[in-house]
Length: 467
Ligand code: HEM
Image 1 (tube, rainbow, N blue to C red):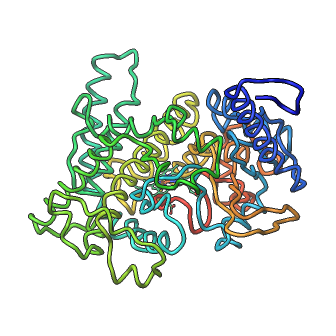
Image 2: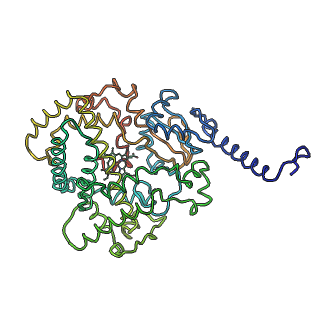
Image 3: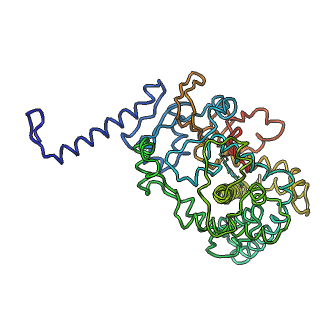
């Protein structure tokens, strides 16, 4: 092919060059977004953004470093997806609480299959409001009291396992798998009445499938990658590009477990008062008892009231059961493990905590009421969560163009809060690098800016399991 009468290039080469030029122009335009908005932007690797560094070191590490360098508000990219990273407590208050309706949803960087739109973590607008209103009573005082006998049972098994391992390996052993098993047993028994024996069965299927879910690597999924580099492409081909995030077999495993629990519940006719029962009470169909899953009852555009009268669908029960099992399991297990680590590495704090437990609880069995007496325990837990926030970023999506504290935020923008960076900012914390449970003592709590402390997020869309 002759170009401007100057050079003659083969057609295939012209095709490749045109494609490369288009991609470069597209990337250049996308990655100049923050400059156009007048927002400080992190130096970005062309096309990749922070993808490589984020993959190698994680958000916690890169955000903490970037806040020191770029300040409390700056832009960055994962591939060509922009994120506005915010570590300003006042802006976080505006976004999570004061202007919640403008930021009620989370962003989704990739197009997910329909079943995911019913997950509490993913759902948007009135659909999310309906799900949250129905599922929130899982953690009322009455239901939490009813969970205690199940927790005691799981705890007894954990004690036996630990005692046994202390005998076998007095020099020390890895406690992490036992805590993971314990947490899974607690979630499944308190939420679903399921005995899954995760503590006592080696290679337990619940633990294995959760691991598969949690270790999902989007960058090995070509559909995911394509949308990271060409964020608008999913609007053009939403069905073609939608991804399930995890394998079919993992989804099937959790769906089968939920159906089993549902079936048992219907047969035994007993009076449970847990998450599954809440969903069953809100469910008006019969489908789950059959083998087929009616996944096509996903709707759009209904109000909260209209959804309430149509009831919980099969799809909503199935996906949210899995979400509760996984979201509750990994976070709680990791929090307990970090706290054990903090106690082991700081024996003075450990001794003080043991003293409090001996004094205030003695040999009583822990109950919903008496754990509230353990004030120092609560302080240590909160400080441990300040040191080790589990989520690298907490995100909200702007549903319209808006300006907050002089920062122009365009519709669709991912607003990402960086918990670890916030938890260590000298502006918000006195001696941030010191492990000081006393900062959470009731008499000092007034000094804490609650929007600079995000272990469970903030506002109406915070963690539903916080209590
Ligand atoms: C120590 C344990 C836990 C930690 C540190 C934790 C942390 C978090 C965080 C940071 C968020 C995001 C909040 C936001 O966007 O503002 C979240 C959301 C969520 N968490 Fe937790 N979580 C824990 C336990 C649990 C438990 C036990 C459950 C359920 C059994 C649970 C279920 C959820 C769900 C469903 C959401 C999404 C809520 C929504 O979008 O409405 N979490 N969690």
